[in-house]
Image (cartoon, rainbow, N blue to C red; front, top):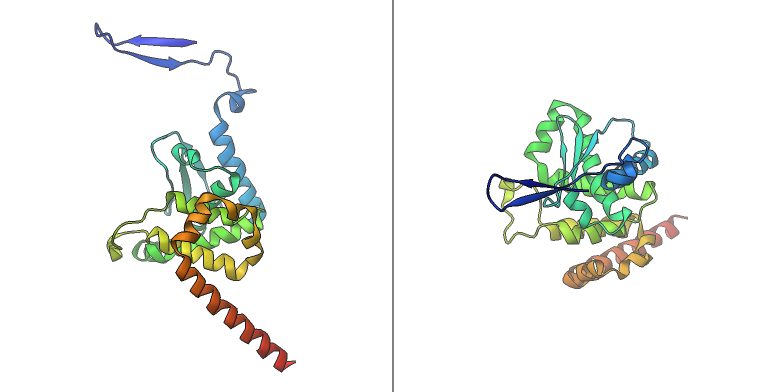
Length: 232
């Protein structure tokens, strides 16, 4: 049913949608799809990694905010509903939640850790990205989705403002994630998600740098295998 609220004598009206058959048995089905999705992905991450620290989580209905954040003092996570419009899969959402979980778990290190996280925030952004990859793999999510999601939402400022900015350039974060997957979880480089346009865009954009990295890594692996063979 639609209720029109007339504001004074002006011909301006706002429409509010009222659900008349809402009860606790159908609450999630009627109103809570966004919350349910976030909580289900978060629960899978927590269970898959057997997290032994509390990480409070809430979903804020803010469609214009494509973001999520963690409060290091309270160890809590806030996911804004606008982020869900960018996540095409649970895997992509898992990366964002896993990243914020990594911040919250890190914050359990005490006051000195909180100071370090605040004064060296860029380093902890990289660290949380990579920890989120571990969380994803342990919980059965595809880490290639981290590159897809990051390529959608990471900012790419013209300059890196050093200590003034709290986050590294998106390109640096994406390359760091790719290198981590390449070294630790190479089996996912054959994932069907590598056909996603946002993943392909990342590969096109940084083709030369990634090719150079892969060459160096392959040479390093060959030397390591040769060394092990000689040791045997």
